[in-house]
Image 1 (cartoon, helix red, strand yellow):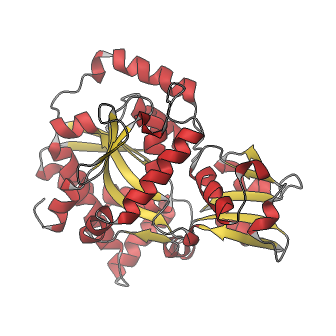
Image 2 (tube, one colour):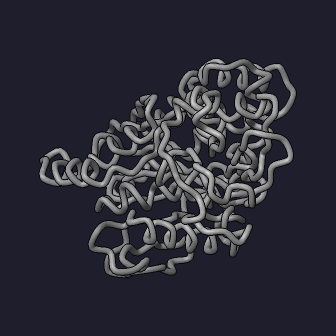
Amino acid sequence: MTRRFLHLIVFAITTVAMLSPSAQAAPKKQFKFAWSIYTGYMPWVYAEQSGILKKWADKYGIDIKLTQFNDYIESLNQFTAGQFDGVTGTTMDALGLPSAGGVDTTALIIGDYSNGNDAIVMKGKGKKLADLKGQKVHLVELSISHYMLALALKSAGLKERDVQIQNLSDADFYAAFRTSEVSSIVAWKPGLANIEAEPNVSIVYDSKQMPAELIDIAMVSTRTLKENPAFGKALMGAWYESLAAMKGTSAAAVAARTMMAKASGTDLKDFETQLATTYLYQAPADAVAFLKSPALTGGVERVREFCFEHGLLGKNAKSKDAIGIELPDGKVLGDKNNVKLRIDGQYVALAAAGKL
């Protein structure tokens, strides 16, 4: 899941998409949804393989095709280009990529937050966060890892300029950490699991220390959703039925998690450890409660500050208010005349009320 932000590529792709006749959305019956391998996204592959997604699509007389990407950023690039109607990602990447690229995007499903799936690791025992000062820190630059590092450093009284950031692909996490050139790394699971298992290492910070901060979502085109509400309802219904199916100790639940483990390239035992550090909003009511909480607004505020400070809102952005973000209650952070990211609460409220 290489989450490096590529401004020129994104804007070039977006421009082509906007000029393309196919970008002019119209009521339709077939939809495409992109996803990549990460613990919190695996229920989607189960929804497809189990037939749950088809069941919900059939209910609304539509067809939804899932496409797996090995490269996380490429899935977002393709969504930004209008090649997909929805994609998995993080709230930060939704703002920094499609929204900043001019695509009006809706965060439809609040899926989970990292509760230990992301960590800062240093070689050597007994290391502390303050020991990062002066170090080269390897990570996927301008990604959710970069965001976590910035907040972690701040908590220790440090700033980003106190370290040297070195860009690294997520595909290289473990291999790079085993070389002599890398002494500090910010990584996420499953690659992180191998790093944590190495002897003589210290986990100096992990996402458990910032609950409800690194949010994973299913985002969709706002225009597509507005013109095709059936698409949103089918995705929402399939998501929560899949979460319900994987919960518990029944044979069926174990089989569901085993399927997800296999699809992510690991076994059930390892996948269970990943789930243990992933806080899934298991029921619609859980997500509804989060969407009404101060934690959501606070997290969005920090995300937009980071994106502006790191140039992710575009070269012409004069402040963090350059792009408007609409919250579930209708309040807008930023420019009300340039809303490009909407955190929707309507569809999950239908799910919570049993009205999908």
